[in-house]
Image (cartoon, rainbow, N blue to C red; front, side, top):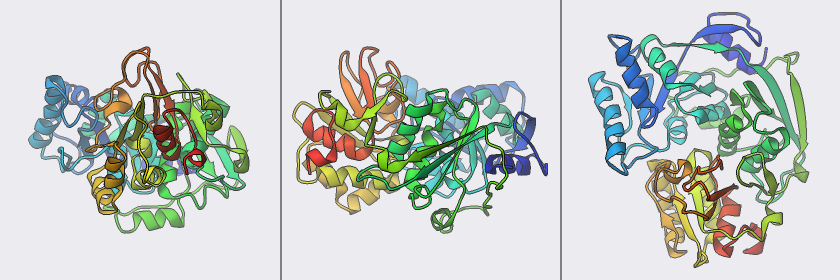
Amino acid sequence: MTITEKILAAHSGRDEISAGELINAKVDLILANDITAPIAITEFKKIGAKDVFDKERIALIPDHFAPQKDIKAAEQCRMLRDFSREYNLGLYFEVGRMGVEHALLPEQGLVVPGDLVIGADSHTCTYGGLGAFSTGVGSTDVASAMATGECWFKVPESMKFIYYGKLNKWVSGKDLILHTIGDIGVDGALYRAMEFEGEVISPLPMAGRLTMCNMAIEAGGKNGIIVPDNITEQYAKNRAKREYKFYSSDKDAVYVDVREYDCSKIPLTVSCPHLPSNTKPAAELSSIAIDQVVVGSCTNGRIEDIREAAEIIKGKKVNPNVRMIVIPATQQIYLQAVKEGLAEIFVNAEAVFSTPTCGPCLGGHMGILAKGERAIATTNRNFVGRMGHPESEVYLSNPAVAAASAILGRIGTPEEVI
């Protein structure tokens, strides 16, 4: 069996399962945010459940429109707070304690290797970077799981992606996943597990692994996953709030497709409007002027991402025709950035340094685009109207390219400014 099949088998009380089977499985953690949780809460009350299945296994995180941007957002966030109080939930994160959900939960040790996690947010697949099976589900699935602790799944087929060679300077996990999506398309892994491995993945830091698994959904994947190893152990051992288990794929596991990539040939990569699969080398886009740069989100808002952007922009200024918004993904990352002097670097460069929020990624707040404006962002989606006006455009990149572009006022590469 593959690692995905083993985790699903273990959580459904089976010794063996195979792709295509329908199973019922116990979940280790359920999460929802201020957009999706209100629907789940409404449905939970409709089904007449007397209580939640476990008060320490349901995480409600107001992060999309929080800090509350308007009255409607405030009402939605209040539903999470009231429900958490009513059922005495242990994992409610108010503003000041919250962060972008998919950065916060691994950081806090609330998702651990070997877990089965569902979330009412498509980027729940992030936690595959830890060697967990995690996937996004609908709010009604979350409602029933909050009551029962279980969810049904169709066991996905698995695809294997092998990365070999040597990474070029500034090329990171973000470039690897953008290149991969560019290769297979936005439905190239439809309802499949995307398993990442190879000599380039083995030394890849946890931040890069989480980034790659985060964007599995942008290729249609059911989940992204990396077999846990020593890097996983180093990350998990001092933060895990529960016992964890490492699963691995059998040598004779079945994959419907195996792709190999020579990473020495993968350049700094940018996704152009209006699909993550519309990729081009950053160096070929120097004619694209921009109005806004966003560094942050559940994809690239970790301390490593903030450091990378700061390294590029230190001692320089954001182009006068550009606004740059830097959003650490959690309070802990925010504080670390302040301690390391990174916040000062951004403010001195005339960028905005924000409290944690999803904000502009989904066109929520803290950086909405006007008609005709263009942004380059370290976020995960660039669909029509994703960050604001339907006639605006979003380009996706890693933090180094985003920071270089902020200085140049157009899409550019770190080599141009260092």
